[in-house]
Length: 101
Image 1 (cartoon, rainbow, N blue to C red):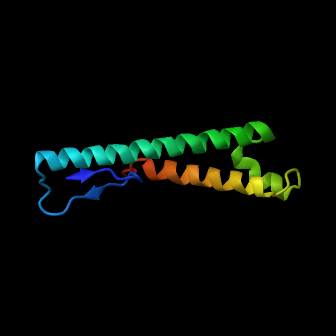
Image 2: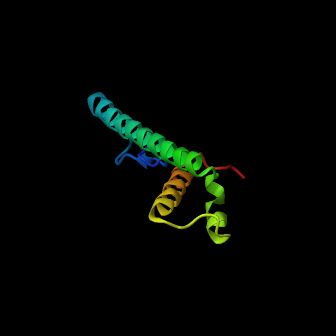
């Protein structure tokens, strides 16, 4: 039995995949709480990234270019933006189902 974990790639329950109904219910509720918490964290990241993009009138995928061409100074705040954007991209990639080739 596979149940999604906090980063979305699943975990396999030990044994033969059988749990008593009460244990399964508790595990599913625990996992649901983790997923809800993850959604809240992702929503907060999305909001912070959107706020940076609005305040600096610059899409996140152009931040490095703007730093290199001198139109944006790499301050602690800009580093926070880069970290938030990269965290959001990594989390989004981890949640996508694998591509079948």
